[in-house]
Length: 154
Image 1 (cartoon, one colour):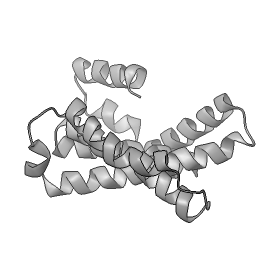
Image 2 (tube, helix red, strand yellow; image 1 turned 135 degrees about the vertical axis):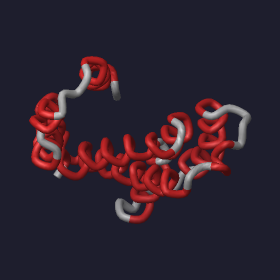
Image 3 (cartoon, helix red, strand yellow; image 1 turned 180 degrees about the vertical axis):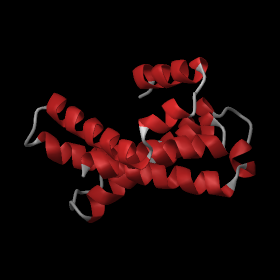
């Protein structure tokens, strides 16, 4: 579940989002996940709402906005599909974080990462065969970009 739903879902929706809107707003929207996680904790885990937990989203989110986007009000001029996929990405990211936390009670962190990313990769291999890329004769610079993303992306 962590790999098929969490990892693959986050990566697909995040990269789809940045194909529709700029990276700064895409990151901002995806990282609304702490808001969803806090709501989940209040509603389903019955965590008591503290002053810090209640005040963090309304004060932290604008700070994140100005850090990632700046003073430009670009978020109000963005593609609606991009915004929607960014919100879906933030929900997948929330699932990934919560389900991963649950998995840490049973598995070592490295085992969890191996299985999560491994099953996410298997799902992508089933949906988009790597052989398609080889048969298409993808340019060398595209392979370098893939390698860069594989090594340096979060």
